[in-house]
Amino acid sequence: MAKIKLFRSDLEKHISNQLFEISTDSLNLDNIQVVDDTLSCTLSVEHAPNGYRVHGSLGVTFIEKCDRCLTRIDEILESSLNLILTDNEALLNDENMDVIHFSDSEEFIDLSPIIHDLILIEEPVKRLCNETCKGLCPNCGANQNESQCNCGPREVESIWGHLKDLKHKNLE
Ligand SMILES: [Zn+2]
Ligand SMILES: [Zn+2]
Image (cartoon, protein in one colour):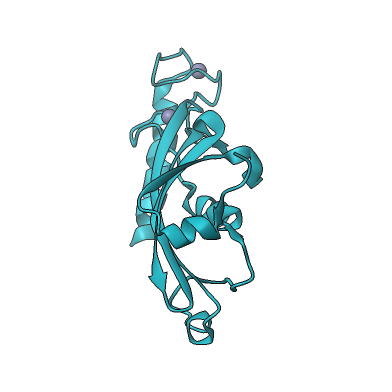
């Protein structure tokens, strides 16, 4: 499937928990990598004034690298989606809701841009394989979670200790 389109016939049927598999190729996610290049979306449709309410969940697994040791980590995201499709002016001006203009003449709504934005918002900023990840040796590049090199671990520990102190200070 290229894009995620909801056709008027789907909307009229008031689909319930219908599963959509979406290829991320069509979403232009730049350097964001996703397992199987696919995400899944479960959508339901209900009636709303002059239109429809579309709600459901979005599931995606990001392929990330640990910021310290560069090991691959998979981050599972479950996000929710709640939109009103309408041409009702009062709803369109309500800033507390996600409202998309949808008039009687339109045959489908393309959800790709909405899903694209959701993914960009939800992509994890901080990525650690483990809170206690020891990272790579700055000297020889060895993954210090797996083995200890001969570069003098004490020095490295003191660097991390120093960073921790800084973080704590920032939090206070
Ligand atoms: Zn790590
Ligand atoms: Zn080393």
